[in-house]
Length: 404
Image 1: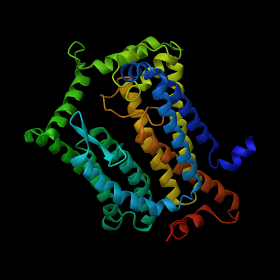
Image 2: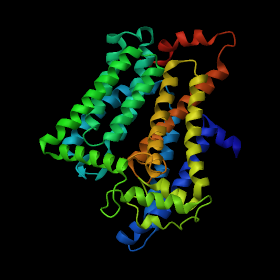
Image 3: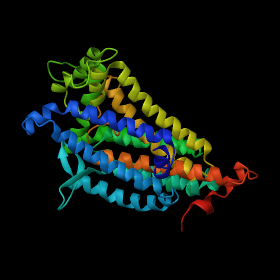
């Protein structure tokens, strides 16, 4: 059995273990947290949502299997196409996207009725593109025109297009991009200038948008309200801080070992217990031990990605694995921080665990690419000439890893 798995499932076994573990936890948590939805919309058929979720998980695992078999070098060229697609898709979403709470985040594919968050697609494409550019520009990495501008222009375009509908995602993508550029040796002077310009732009946007009296202005007011609610504590009676308070109750009543699977009470009161606040439901049912386990799995994924960076003898796979892992972990940490009331409510889902369609599939796609990097690094490690030093391998990265 073990030999069969090794034959077909390539790459880091620990990362495979993390994926399977989070998928199992997700299935249990979604089954438990969708009971209210089932009684409201499907006459108590609790199997409806869990089967739907399992179907997406199965599709996601197929995506991982296919993507991890593709050599990582092909994702370099693919990143250009994906980025070129993502920018117009983000623009279309702002104009024609499905509106919910004054935010247009979902784009529906005509004829199929399938909606997806274009920001999920864009952040995946952007991380891949930044990895490509950092790899290609290492010889001129400190140059403003040759290295910094070709990277920061797409970053700025993506973040500006995401910002009106989703502040937290725009900030997260911007921050991860900056960290990845820092790791890629972009000049600190240029990154400092970028931070200053970004802060000024965001400040002006928040100041001027409410004056327009449009949907965009309403979104900015919602951001301000959430931050004020978080900093002041809000008022439960006025529903200002209802979500955070219900999450606190779920976590407090979970204790060390939890109430047990399927015994959550706060799932009946928490808005979106199957997505935005699924971590609170996990702690309520499985206790602090369950919450720590989920946190550990995400940190383990980041640790294994760090090992891939250390073992990689070429820059592109190192940046690719690190960037994709970092964006997933940042999103996970944001979701968990909101659940335990460390951050204001943001609407970020828990990657792989939260119920969802497109967001979960894009997460699986990113993990498949990370496994492709792991497979490629292991293969190189087994076949590399012992006499060749790491530096000699690194100097060959541009010619060897970029498909023409």
